[in-house]
Each structure stands twice: as structure tokens, then as C-alpha cells.
Length: 71
Image 1 (cartoon, rainbow, N blue to C red):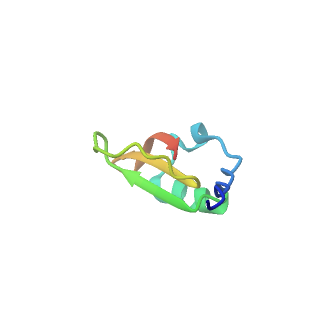
Image 2: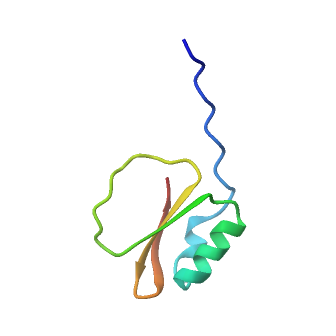
């Protein structure tokens, strides 16, 4: 049987610090802090709930991050 792979660690970053930022600035900051995937979604978007290590999600209304979560 193949070994179970080790998931990469999440960047040590506070998701709350992104709320209220401009979406473009938030994306640049997230990439600078080590997030490998940055996903911006409009409010109410239907998404799957799989967890992806290294991904940060932004709910963006207009040009402003309203909500932020990992995975």
C-alpha cells in the first residue's frame, strides 16, 4: 500500500485581516504570505466543500473582501 502523503502546512496568517481590503490588494498580500491558491467569489456563489491545503477564499462584493476563509 502506498504511504499517505503529508498535506502541506497552511501559511500562518489571519483570515480576518483580509476583510475590508480591496480584492486586488488582498490577493497580492495572500500570495506574498505563502497562499498557493487564491480564490475570489461573488456573494452567494455555490461551491463544493472540499478542503484544499494552501487555498484562501475571498467573498468579494464590488471590489471589497467581505468574508475570508481557508481551504
